[in-house]
Image (cartoon, rainbow, N blue to C red; front, top):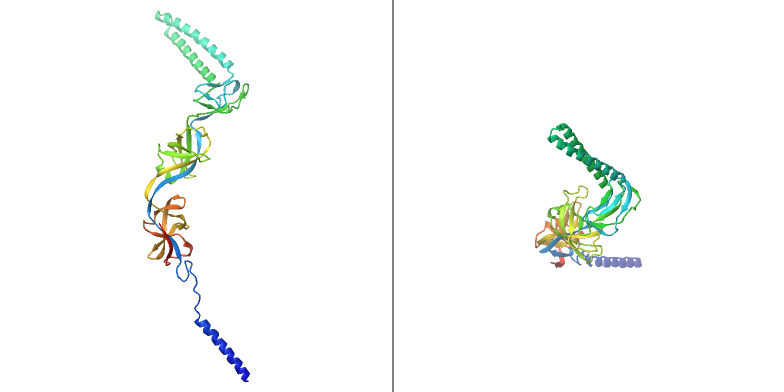
Length: 352
């Protein structure tokens, strides 16, 4: 009996000691996200201040010959002469292709002979009319016949010209696709000709930048290797914005001549849209994207406040804020996911 009482007493003492230890031991403070032993996290912050920013955008474009034409004949026929020096320069009006036209030439000679006879008859009748040896009506019929033959001759010469393909402008001939003796139709591609003195640059800009594009505006562009910068000047824009892409087509003429500039080549076009001396640039990681808006966390009186903003141009790691912030505001740049409205803030660093 005594032994049982002693065992019970020992157990009671052990239990008492255990509860005393638990009761007097301080619970370990949970570490906050921003540091140990504090109820609010430490975050990095950024002080918004105005800065000078050059507004520019980079878009893609392509080079094209200032003038380029697919050479095709107007009528079907057999090729009797080919003068297409591939890769060579030719002057405007140079005869490049000649089709068979012996039948047309024969018809032309016949009409010219008829015209000569009618002119002699007209000259004699003119003399007779002066002495009333012929009626005026007969003389007018002869004049009508002369004019009719002249019209036929003009038509025949037009048909003969259609058997010739001449250079429409000074340019360089591309690859030829026909040879002498071939029978060609009106849709047969003979060759191409393009100007090599002037190159144009076509590119598209987003709709919101269309008001700043003007004729005479200078642009810079680089080719695939991006090692050399070329200059161009805007000469025209499309009449309206494309309804499918919401872009405006712009055409510029290249000012910097170079053999490296080949029509059809890809180009990266840089547009300088102006400068803003009071641009508010913030780190891009400070922005919280939303379904409808963009937000940042602004520190006010030591607490976090979510503010909607509007953004402008992007520059590497920073982006312009056009609405929602003022110079001197302090925004949070780290720990954004763990903050709520009116959360207390503690800073680990503040950048400017």
